[in-house]
Structure formats: structure tokens, C-alpha cells
Image (cartoon, rainbow, N blue to C red; front, side, top):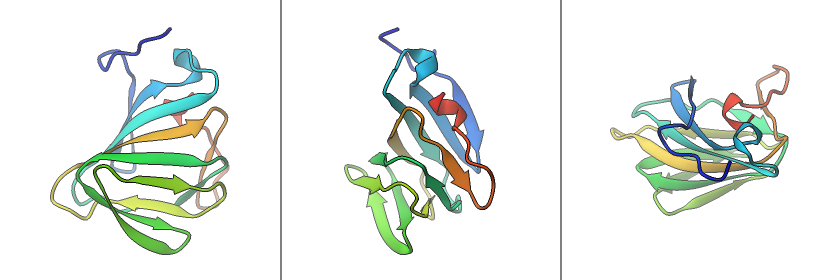
Length: 124
């Protein structure tokens, strides 16, 4: 499958965010998973870690990134590179929604707190 239309892309919700699965093994990708994330206004962060490097590119709105204990503002046009096994959180303290595209190598897993690592359903 070469084209995933926005209408056909699966949607998931977790921790106050909406994830739209674009590229993933279940949709024909072999090496890279890509999804769009939309975080509603006023959504607090959920600290987590990833087993592989993740890249996020902000599309619209403004968010706050905490990466390895350091906090940054994150707005449209900017990118964040999240190294593996690094505490990461993304909050939207603004009055407008925030949207970004996330890229993670196939096989990358997330871990929230002391829970077992899992593959996000939008990356499968």
C-alpha cells in the first residue's frame, strides 16, 4: 500500500491526545512509523520513554517539551529529537490545540512509568 488517505488512517486516543496512524507495518511501511498527534488545549504531559529515537515536527499551535529534565517551548516549524531511553513529556498549556507529526523506527516501543514497554497501536 503506497497511499494512506486521511479518511482511511486509523485514529486512537490516549492521555488526552488523538493519534492518527499514517505509516506503519500494518499499512505497508517496513522501516518507519509515522503518525499525526493532536493535543487538546490544556492537556497535561505524560512522561514516557522510547526504545528508539523519535522525531517530532510541530505543525500548528504551541506546546511545552520536557526532555531529560530540561523544558522547551515547541511551536510550528520546529523539531524535537528524542533520544532512546530518555524521559520525555509533551504538554499543551495553551488555549489552542497543538499538532505535530511523529516519526519512530518500526519496532520502537514506549514505556510510561514502570509499566512494561509496548508498541503504540498507531505504530503497528
